[in-house]
Structures are given as C-alpha cells and as structure tokens.
Image 1 (cartoon, rainbow, N blue to C red):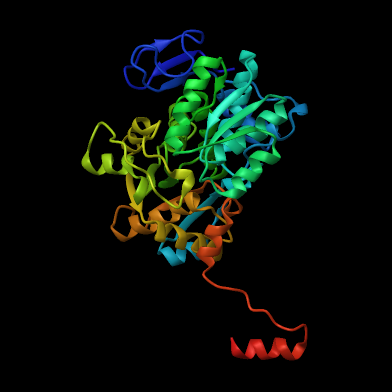
Image 2 (tube, helix red, strand yellow; image 1 turned 45 degrees about the horizontal axis):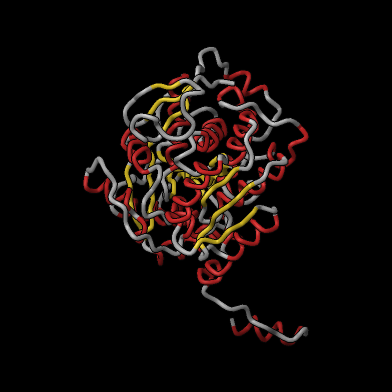
Length: 408
C-alpha cells in the first residue's frame, strides 16, 4: 500500500499513520494522505485485467478487496463516451460524458465508501458512521454490507424517498435527522468521538478523497493517458472536486499525463458558499442556509470547501452557480442529448457548463468532460418535473394508434 501518513492541507504539518485519523491535531484542518509513489509503473496498471477502480491499487493507500467482497470489488470502471449531439446543442465540438451513475449503488460516492470500508477493515474498527444527503450513506451501506461491516447512517428527513429506500434495502441502521445535512454531520462527528465508531464523513475522513481521485485516473486512461482541457464537476461539500484534482495532480507528478485540466466547479445558487468565495477572491468560506432541489450538493457549511477552492485555483479553473430551474432543465438535456439519466446534482454540471459557455468562462474550442455523479433513479420526482409532459393513453387498437399519430 502506498500510504506513509498525513499532511495538513491548512498548516502543512506532517503526521505518521498512527498520529492522526481525521482532521489535523494542530489546527483542525483537513488532512491529505501522503504516499510514496516512487517506482509505481504505469505498465502495471495497463497490464491489470481488473476493470474496476482497483486496477489503480498501486496508487491507493489501502489494499484491494479479495474476490469474496462482492460489490465492494466492482466499484468504478464507469464509461467515458463522446456526446456529439449534446456538444452540438452546447456549441462544442468535443464533449465527453463520464457516467458514474453506473456504479453499484448509482453514484460516484461508491468510490469513497469502498476505500473507507477497506481502511476500517485495516484498522479493525466497526461500526462505520456517516452523515449524508443520501448517496454517501447508500454507498456506505452497500459497501459495508459487502464487507460484513455494520453501517450507521444519519440522513436529513427531507432526503428523497428513493435514497431512503436504498438505505433500508442495504440494511444500514438508518436514522432520519430533523434538520439539515450540516446538522446530521455535526451529530455523526460527535457520535464517532464519544462512541468510538469509525467516521466516514466527507471532508473529515482523508480516505474519501482517495476513492474519488480514481475518477480522474479513469478519465485520463480512457483518453489514452492524456488530460482534456476542462472537467466539469458539481460541488456540494467540495470533496469530489478535491478528489478529482488530487487524481490528476498525482498523474502529472508521475509524468503519466503532461498537464492539469482546468476544473469547472458548479454549485446550486441556493447552496453556493464556495462559488461566492471564488467570486470574491476570498480565502475563507462563509456558511449559508442551503436550499436547493439538488439535494446531493446541498451543503451550507461545506466540510471540504477550502480544499475545493484551492483545487480550482491550482488548475486555473473557475466556479459558477446555477438556478434550480436550470438544473432541472439539464436533466432533460442530458437525457435527450446524451441518453444519460442524471439526478439533479449530477445534471448541475451540464447547467454550469452551459452558463460558463454563455459568459465566456469556457471556450467553445475546449475539449470538455462532464462528470455525471449520480443516476436519475435517485430522484424520480425531479425527473418527472424535468420531462414536463404526461404520456398519452390510447385504446389497444390500430385505429386509436393511427388517430393519435395523426394528431401529434
């Protein structure tokens, strides 16, 4: 395993593997996992027959699961494909979709939960607790079940029913919290501290980023070990874009790709503290009272906001914010333009790209990858709203069919 310890992203202090677990013991900043990747050979990755994210085991700080781990070993390996019709609609000649809604539980969060579960197994700790707007909890519930580990998930009571149903099916100990995601996050952190449980919380647990960075590894390899001009990422608490940045940065440092792609972070207008800080050129992030239809990116006090801000700055990228109306409309645009079914938070990436093209933040000659982070099956009500139509009912006769076709 390429794991040598931790470095604080805020104060730069280094710690050995046993000297820290979550945040920095000195300043409470978020920790980065430190790794010794010298000598890691790209040919070893290319020679792997494992189609999942575990093909990048030499670049990960945990050992891959064994064949008995079931779904835990099948995460990642999601498709990257050209979306020419969508590109024509946007006025771009080179648009790619990275569809992480194809993961076992339908979201990119499976990547983080798989690595966290492996870390918990290394430590011999159970149960694992997390706060979630839905997807992270579902991912943890499934990965923990596959590993034979107990999961406890705190979710705002406003979470979409489909996500709550997934949590129940996977057998997590599910508790609905009266309040926001931020309230659930605080409670889960206190529970981990007081009860000795392992905490998966995004931003707090350094190993979540290590799972999410594998999306960047896959994009680069699927493009023939090169970086696109731009990668578009929906942003809530900031952990996914932090992971994507870390993945590309490691590949640049290893010499496996020759440049860093610019990152475009997209937030919902009702939950956009990172985008506001970006626009103001601020070094701190002021919390907001989050409200957005895109529940998976609803985070008023983003736990990984500072690293997410730094990730975009380091890449030479930008942040934009978009309305809920634009997000819902983008569900239909992705479906009809690229045959991709996205939940609202995932569709926000498309809405943000359209806005960034309109104001000139993104050039129309750029090669762009849209990272779709979750399937539309997570929120059917939003999909129905996006479709904005009702199916026609006819009698089971050719006469009725011809009549309807003639009237359409």
